[in-house]
Image 1 (tube, helix red, strand yellow):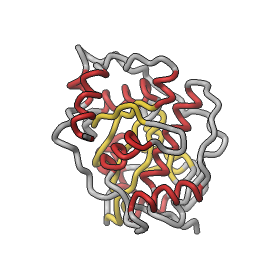
Image 2 (tube, rainbow, N blue to C red):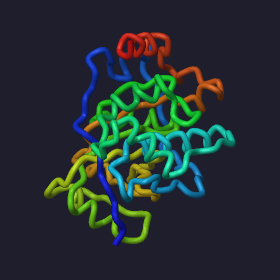
Image 3 (tube, helix red, strand yellow):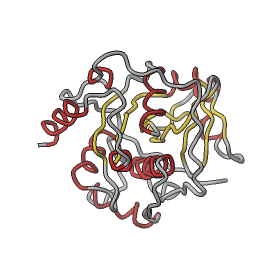
Amino acid sequence: MPDFKLGKLPALIPGALRDLTYYAAGPLPQAPPSVTVPMVSDWGMLGNENYGDCGPAGAIHGFMAAATDTYQTETFPTADQVVSYYLQYTGGQDSGVVLSDFLGYVKQNGFYGHCVDAYAPVSVSDVNTLRFAIDAYDYAYVGLTVSQGMMSAAQGEPPWTWTLEEAQGTSIGGHCIILAGYDSNWLYGITWGATVKIAYPAWTQMGDEAWAVITGELAHAGTDGHGINLPALQADLFRLNS
């Protein structure tokens, strides 16, 4: 069986940051009915089969999604480089990461030539805004609670399917993935190098944090924030990370 590791620590939403909808001048643009997962040839495990580096692995998967959607040709770090970055961040311990803290670190320090320009929390119960973030920014960076049923479902051939039945039951830890697409029936996540289909009721059960992330790829492509007041969000992030 594949060896999959977890590694997301409990969610922490900094008080200096407001929900993504706070930074909108008015109602957010309506997201389309569906968004297709970017065609990445090899997402890669990025060390998450041996280390609890799902937070860093998810960040790189997000950069991959954004680069593919904006037609930018980029080089991404190897699994060994991702693990090295992770262990440098944690002080050498395989201790997992708090997603908000890790996003702040990447914003300040970059990640092998890739960068985060801005980020804001999205309520896990606000599916419309979550879908907006996936469409506007190419992915959502999310944390969830993994059950034994979900882990068992991920032992077969991908794409895997996580339904409400799999999401219920005994928790075995926290995990970070990206959501890179959706339709009327499923959210499509990327984790452990593969695609997983997540039923909306299952997301309601398992999701415990979600982040809209505006990457350097989007900034270089000339995004205007898609209805978000970027200067106000970046000012809050500056105060948070000062």
